[in-house]
Image (tube, rainbow, N blue to C red; front, side):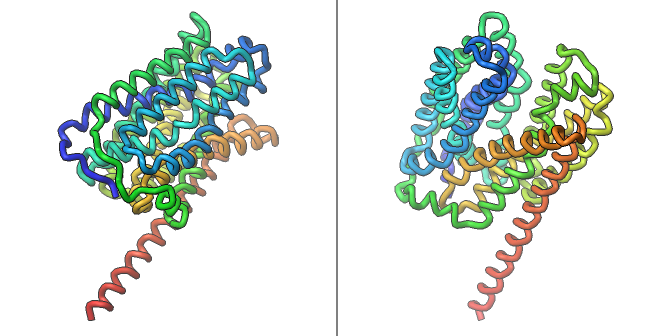
Length: 403
């Protein structure tokens, strides 16, 4: 269970500290994509090979989230957050110094290891600082760091990389990691670790069907957003026929949509979480289906991209849902949420790329994204149905025992 902090008035500064870490992680994750041509030249490799560096980071996220959550089960969350940011700062600092492609791959994998465990642990700390009916809003504050990175951090890192060299961008991210360590050490509550926690208990999360359904909802449903976002730059230049200088503006509009989503949606989720999750997936399916029809007009596609970005709040909603269904295995379940979303980050672009390669056109990722959102919606509805049925059976058993 989530322990409540005895001094909830301190929630604001703690959430800010955790959001700084989210900002650092979001900046390095998304800026690496925009800096790909620069470090490809710097490491003397071609663009497709440089793309493997991005995959190495994602693999680090997928591997690191469950492994760290299980091995660190007995650590206090404040201590774990500091150690995770230390590893993050180390990985990005070494990335700035990478002498060749092989080392860069290794350092990006290292940088990705703490990603999922950090967000999962930070979400649990955030939820412990506020009343139960404000958990998702608290988690949303942390994710605001990630979404703000897409609006501010990524363009700033990209500009810095172009001005003084791509290595400086990774160096600045490493410094943000050190800043997060200091803020967490100063502000985070010194709550002792749960004496009952253990790696075996954390692994118990994998026995729960609702945990798998929630993870599946994210892995499939969120893939729709990535199916479009990955190819957005190409679509804008090839279909919308805008200049390359306009692309960052539209990407920033996407980030604004994600930011607004993480401000507004958590309020609804704290009242009816499954209804909100299902509504977001239906919303995503509709705006993704609209994308092929508006891709030829800059104003219309910008509006649609903003609306697609709002669907990014699904990550925050499912983070809280996992707290509800994980029971006493909170750490692993919370961290796995980010493994699921990095699975979506692989699945969406892969299927979108197949559609383009199959001759369905540059706008076909919109249809792929719509189908993935509907797939996530189906899993979400199944989870809600089974949860309701389980609750009814439990109530019947209580009534029977009372007789």
